[in-house]
Length: 387
Ligand SMILES: *Cc1c(COP(=O)(O)O)cnc(C)c1O
Image 1 (cartoon, rainbow, N blue to C red):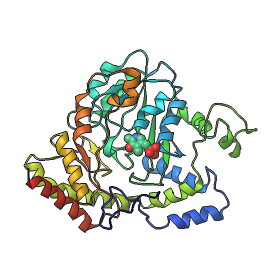
Image 2 (image 1 turned 30 degrees about the horizontal axis):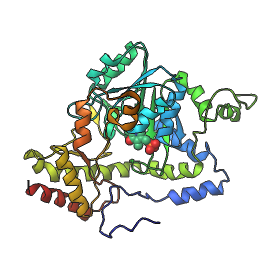
Image 3 (image 1 turned 180 degrees about the vertical axis):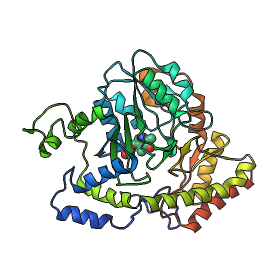
Image 4 (image 1 turned 90 degrees about the horizontal axis):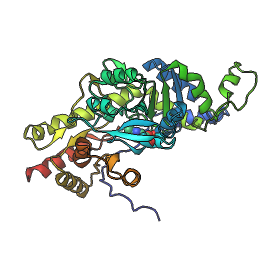
């Protein structure tokens, strides 16, 4: 049975946006007679990341999840290894390492922002720790990210940035996704730049680059062979099929070409919400997720914090009643059914739990019309006049 159609005035949380040339590029990929991975469009997308952000080597993947899984494989994460992950994140950040047998050690968010609290990381490092996986929530690096990198260096730990939401964002002038040894980007439909599903692994540590390409190509030296660097094309390592089709890459390329416009529009939408909700912030009724120190954000999401969980849930229901879909975000992973079933109840991580209870994401997408955004703002204001 098909889902019942939404009312015509319904404002979705997100809607895919066509910048223009996507279908033409897909047509070109078909005409070129090469639809499998690592063709012309894939290479253009990868070069875009390498040149624009200064990534040593970029490999397109079928999802951000896949890029994280490839990172875990590339770092030889093994059963018994420990990986430090913020609890307030998407399942893939942890799953990628759980699939290799790692034990996930969760760390709390900071008091002001869902990003991991760098000050709490040192106490969680043991002789078994192999990697730290910071998440750039909403396209912002954690405060004191430099200290996190120094800590990792001091303990010889890998840093894998979950940069799924972080395209175009910067920390102290440096692009997010270039700070760790590896970084995973996502082009899921809900991200700033999309291919429906898609991702990219950024390899910033040159010593990992050659092997990354082999894992990416199902454990073969195919890429090197086609460049004329290997005499035979053969099975040389473990690997999987991490490459997306050229159809996806063609779609993605159109979006990457338009990135400046996409970012401008998102910033406008973000600023409009921030300005319109400022009186509620002044009145102490809501808070807006702050910009982290030293971060130049990418307007990935507009995060609003309610005073408590019941009010948040009432607000979401009120908006829904007005035909507006706003959503909450992560339920902290240390309290998830999967984690609790394996490890029992973990120690409380109060900040991550509070963000799980109070955060609201408002509709923010390219084609959100001014009258629609005004309806969202009006509905929020109406909700709070009665409180
Ligand atoms: C979207 C997202 C992912 C997963 O990316 P997919 O491309 O959907 O697999 C992982 N981590 C974070 C923080 C995300 O926002």
